[in-house]
Picture 1 (cartoon, rainbow, N blue to C red):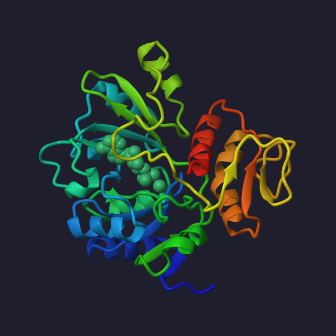
Picture 2: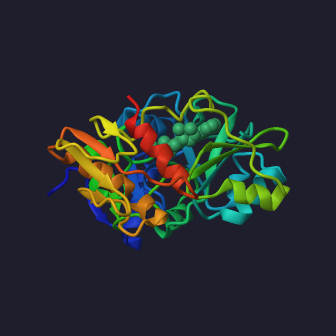
Length: 316
Ligand code: AMP
Ligand code: MG
């Protein structure tokens, strides 16, 4: 399939070309260790507006800003120990930390959707790490898909919804993690709140730093006013969860002993299931079957994040 948007392997030359495109205010989709991101320079109002336009994203939904490391993050957000410690423990890695925005941050206001806080993360994937070394601005980068649709874990997924709408795609095959970062908000009093479950187990981290369990997160929809929309990751057809008995017109996403049309993990491995989740949802969306059914997935560990995404995919 030939694409309208140039799509090239994520070599060092390609990363240098991506840096040029971004400097000019363009949009580049590239792999992170979670899903493919759609990057723009976070200090450019026009560039950031381009992200919202390309994705069709509501402008009250703020973006995650990607930085090199904690020192870099401190240019944009305030990091008391309660926020610096988890950054030092996990970065580079799939943990996003929401902290108070610095007054002199110099970023496009649309990045934070006008909020007084900012979401920051230092990603681990070598392509985006190398890119961040080439540029003197941080990267605003939500998932590289049309708003509300399934997140991309391959360059083909990116093209399926954004071909012709963005300037460049760096391809480095399927991403390893497959599910978006855990989002931790650190409140003014140092209290932690989980805004989105993900690959990083905040409960374990909270026990390490505070000696107690993570406080329960507020109910669905009650997270920050912007973002975390109930319906998300939607394959565009009805999704039935915790399926025990499939119907003939259902595309079945299996797990463990339930094989299905696409299996999250035949061996019942939750990390494998996280990495396959969006690919199975993309296959379900493309299938001729009008409905989707998903086998039960345990909520232990990263299973909580998988079930969170599945519930949003099933919400209408
Ligand atoms: P994504 O679209 O996967 O990149 O997810 C970005 C999510 O990060 C948004 O939906 C918000 O829930 C969250 N987020 C970003 N910035 C903030 C912020 N300043 N405060 C709270 N949540 C934020
Ligand atoms: Mg997204």
